[in-house]
Length: 198
Image (cartoon, rainbow, N blue to C red; front, side, top):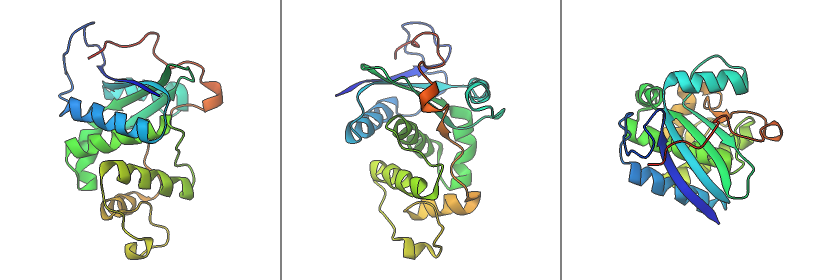
């Protein structure tokens, strides 16, 4: 059974409902994350942490040996009552949204879905995995599927016109997001304790 979905904010005072990153529609994002977790059969709770570029860059460097900011990192906990954490660099999401003909709110929705799908075991290191993961993203976002033939390229990543635009703008490479560390080596998340609940 899916556990609680918590939306948390880096450095927010304990017990407050501060939204320092001006995350739009937090109730809708929590609902969307729950829909993905339930649809994929994820067991345990999920903390979605909205944070700074610096925080995500530090985590990316520590766990993936990549000294750069990315939009989302997912950490599995492998605990019975807690599935893991998703860290989202909100400023990075806002910067990249126009590149994909998207607005901040919709790009944030895609990144939330993407991060939770990583906790559910999805990945995008190989072309087939990318197609499956993108199709799952599109499904949960309620986007219509576009037949691969309609994309004009056998190597196009994704199943919607928006996804094809994304693939074209980045070449054939996957989104710059991934599970933050090899699953077998991550017994605990990078956070020392659970963040403040909102």
